[in-house]
Length: 297
Picture (cartoon, rainbow, N blue to C red):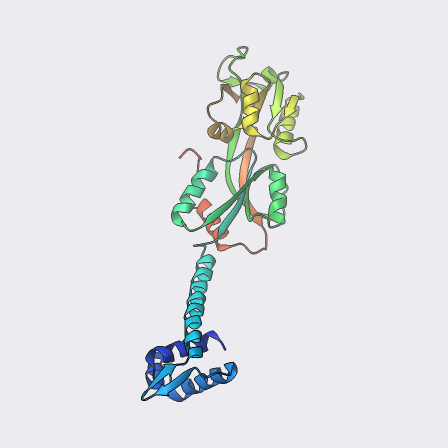
């Protein structure tokens, strides 16, 4: 017995005549009668009895009619849900964001939610290298990560490049002006917003080396709120990209531009090459290409 036969049975039960049911189903009467007999033979019960010119449901027929209505409704709803999921109208978007975070993600998610209100979200924050691993393992579909990274296994969409800033507590008064050079900050103790060996950490070390210097790294701290709390307490200074300052406001810190350097962090959206992507993920990727996002909206 299949969904088609259940629909035939519902029509017969409601019309109470084979002729009327056949007309409703846009089919000939003999094949419909044959389908009813096949169902009764398969189940081993009589489903309808003739009462004059009409058919009446037996006790078994009434039970089947009740279940047939429920089953066909579930089947139709499942078809709708599957189609909507295939169109990215429902489902879950799983996305990771770098520990330094990204000011565009809240803006993008708000716009995405306005367009696809039935989508739910799984958002994970981690180091860029770990996010790449999670995408490879299919634990998440998308991730916003920062260069430098080996992204040979991924498709990427460039988001933007952002400058780094030197950040100290307001208690430090030895620096004047809005910009500082690496020579001025070379001996200052630093908290780096990354772990040794990973991209951002290495980028900062290499920039110091380009100026013939070695950074005075006092601490590593990938918890950005804690890092800025330590900086504001005058524990040490730090170098962070612009979006960190946009997302973490309210700390008692002094921000300086970095003169004589091109150090910058590029954020990219990544997904695994040559693998299935949900329609929700595809729609999110498409949204990121519709317009530039500064993270300041």
